[in-house]
Image 1: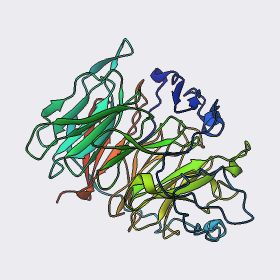
Image 2: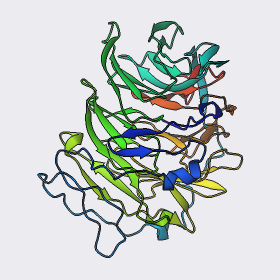
Image 3: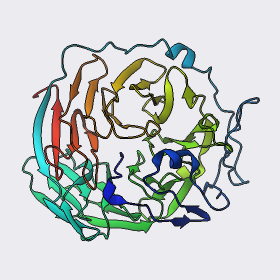
Image 4: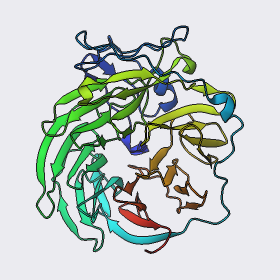
Length: 430
């Protein structure tokens, strides 16, 4: 769920998925985001039914995917009036509070060894991803550069399970329902596990396919989403590991999932960022039978900056992040919540979205850019807290996740050491 392209990764090797050849080196992020050479004819999305909604007449359409001919047409996209005019005058909402947000360290858990051997080099162990697990979120799942997935108790720090070597760094992990969890490796190996409450870990499925540093379950735990590096978004069945659907995202790395909805970005035919478009993909019964509609947000805005990511949030709305050289502005819904973050000193290019997480009920927002501290914001009061900044390592940058059962609990990787995770309680004890 965040950037993890340390210098030690080097180049992402050329791979072919279907008929698409991806040849973008990791280091050229700014160019690759919108101009990756696909090298072959575009592949139709693997969608059993449903059609991509057509853009409103008179607009400049992106190269929209076409669904299988047996599907029924989707309803017309709900095109809203461009909201940017009103948002130019927005200030932080609610206003930033002078009272700091109280944080308490609940536990610190080691989820990687002190040193790990990766790509034939002995380096410091780093946690690349983290997720809560268990009936009461009493466990943490973590992956990293020792090529393994680890499960440990939060209260005691005791390791309760570790996977065999998986061949490459575990770049992302995810969990669902307290008993399912999965890990994604640097060389695109997806492993899905189940740990019944009180039982032992069981392997559910393994597969190879698209995959790059972001992984999430659908809300019903039946499918997983993961993107190819700067490319398509794939949905896999949890039980079988089979590919259920693929979406023609182009140069987008920041995805989200909520209420059977995800968002991807597809570039237009020309080189201009203004020809790119964000699309919502939604489904009812199965992600293989969904429909896409173009979203009305402008990619570039003179006042707001570059729209670097759009994420679905519970309740049917979206979270948007606009960035320029001074700040990133996060807008929730129709502007009922607006939060600004200073970006001076950050490492990543403006075209790459920050790492963001929203607690399940929308109470708290976590924000991070490489080279800057993780910031936590209570959206009702404007109170904030900043965590100690973490230096970049050879393998990972910071990742975090909110407890799905308790919005006041967040796990943050690489705190206080690269091989550890700290669980914070927001608002102090109790």
